Amino acid sequence: MQDAITNVINKSDVQGLYLDTASMTNLESYFASGELRVRAAATISANASAIIRDAVAKALLYSDITRPGGNMYTTRRYAACIRDLDYYLRYSTYAMLAGDTSILDERVLNGLKETYNSLGVPIGATVQAIQAMKEVTAGLVGPDAGKEMGVYFDYICSGLGN
Ligand SMILES: CCC1=C(C)/C(=C/C2=NC(=C\c3[nH]c(/C=C4\NC(=O)[C@H](C)[C@H]4CC)c(C)c3CCC(=O)O)/C(CCC(=O)O)=C2C)NC1=O
Image 1 (cartoon, rainbow, N blue to C red):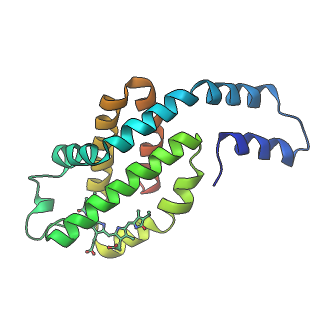
Image 2: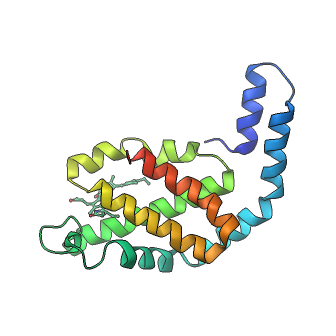
């Protein structure tokens, strides 16, 4: 896993150079937003189950997906879906704190699309639920932190192929 700091240091080290102006600017904005990130992470962790509940209500409930024949039907599959959304929320929060997407590649997206396809988990509906989490989260943490979290929710959605 990388973060905003190791990311720019690794790039400079590969070239055997000190940090250039662009790297310094990147780091400056990362440090300047540090408190915002930590506060957002605290708010998200204190409200994680409410965020997921509201996102499920917005995107998935009362659709064919929760009825017999739908992929969320049966409590086992419903619970698996809620658990997956919790993974997406938690790992997006880690990535937002790190200011880097690498943790999402390594721990979330690796093999995920293939798993979903082989189990018949609908990717379009999953993306809708992640987008709903993005909206609910932004409503809770405010526009600046919400925008930053949105980067990582969107990254998961594009990794799923949408
Ligand atoms: C931390 C990284 C990580 C991820 C991301 C992860 C995802 C993941 N979700 C799974 C299943 C599942 N995922 C869902 C999710 C959904 N179905 C829907 O209709 C909804 C749209 C959606 C929720 C938004 C469901 C229903 C299953 C169970 C499918 C089945 O067994 O039939 C499975 C198969 C194994 C299992 O059931 O536990 C994996 C590996 N596991 C991990 O370790």
